[in-house]
Image (cartoon, rainbow, N blue to C red; front, side, top):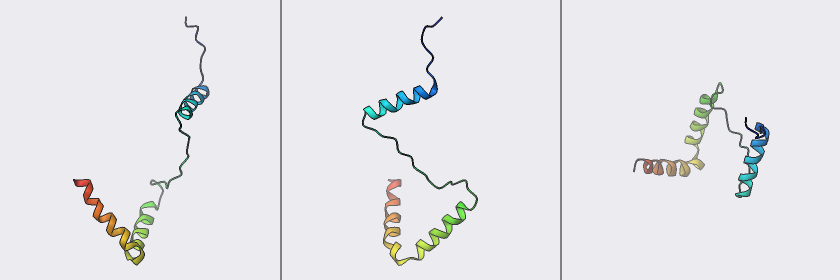
Length: 73
């Protein structure tokens, strides 16, 4: 029979976080749009159309189109 004490998941998580902090890391929580949400795709299309028609976005969109080819290299 093992004499090790049982470590609960909360303690494991705490140890894990301490190890990461000692390595110079810190936790960050990021909230992102839920791509599964109803209406998400439609809103993406709406915003993309607005951006495509905007003179202010032309330079950025041209740049994105240009570097997209780098992925195929």
